[in-house]
Image (tube, rainbow, N blue to C red):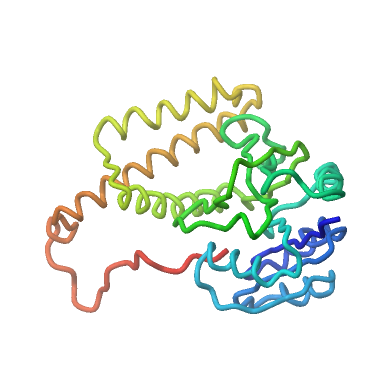
Length: 276
């Protein structure tokens, strides 16, 4: 019977890590890789029975691959500190691992809690994530945002849900969007994507209609409207920042149009290390 290692990467997640670890207490091993928390993350994780390792931050992908490499067992369930494995998902995984699984990895549906309700509409659901995999046949692949497991073969799908608590409030949501749209735009620019007036007008409108009408946001009342509008705003920001990168690559700089920068004022950093 294959055994399971759960991996979690952290930094300053004292408010979340206890519940995350508790939701996978049934696993054979829990490995937490912390990159220098200054709160009680490490102490809470250890009290919950996790094996905690320290590793300086080198990026989401590196941290997650390192965590998998440190695990004792080959089957890995990767969970974030703001996620919880539900009882149905736990039972499904345990049943799957009661014999050798036929596939190299499995995607799980993820449901997010937002503005006081579980979101089962819009682009947010079912939001399948490839989190259960055999480490000899799967590996986290480098991307600036929304990293994922690259698998040797086609993944299967599980039905039990992974619960996600992504944002404290709307302000936190907007801050996260600003950060991730910068990373997404950089990825798109590196891939040769380009943005223009059509991208800025059509893609956000299409995103709103897809979320609100086609994917049922309208069924969740005001919350569905808010998510649909913010998803459209995310798309707008992503293409706007891509357009900005194009302008910069062609030689345009904002200071060129407003005059020289005052002495002692440095440009904003674009490559700060994100926190998990």
